[in-house]
Length: 195
Image 1 (cartoon, helix red, strand yellow):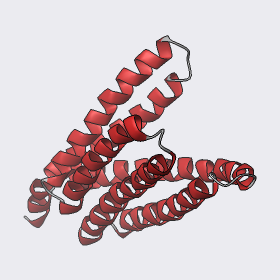
Image 2 (cartoon, one colour):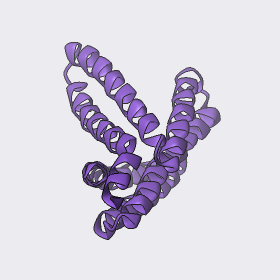
Image 3 (spheres, helix red, strand yellow):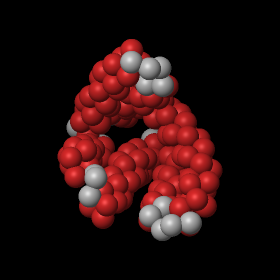
Image 4 (cartoon, helix red, strand yellow):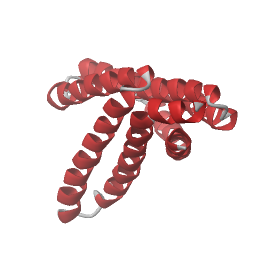
């Protein structure tokens, strides 16, 4: 009886997290497609927008069951506004840097809110291994985003910007690994919530 209650309670979260998972995979694929000149830009751009919308719908849906996902949805919406502002105001050096930093913070908050809130649910359901993976994901992301913020600030200093550029390559690789771990966490969580 308790098992049926859990399944009904987190039905929206399960399907919502699956949508976020699919959106994350689609965004990576579209990012690769963007490399192709002209046609890749069109297909990758449209596909990226579709998968972004899918992820937002997924977070909204999961937010019906898990409060942290609802907060993550709001952070994503604010981040979209920041991205639009960055498009128009990013050429102003200091303002562009501040908008970039705000984007990094908001992106981390999305990962943190999803991972911490879903991990709490996983722990309550007896899936401590999945919960630990979620906690690891947001901790790795925290370190990566702090490094990215520091490197972004250092990138505006002449000569230091060369070292910052090299260091950002290493950080980018770690961020890619963290993104893969995040997708694995989303997949395992959505399956556990559906069971």
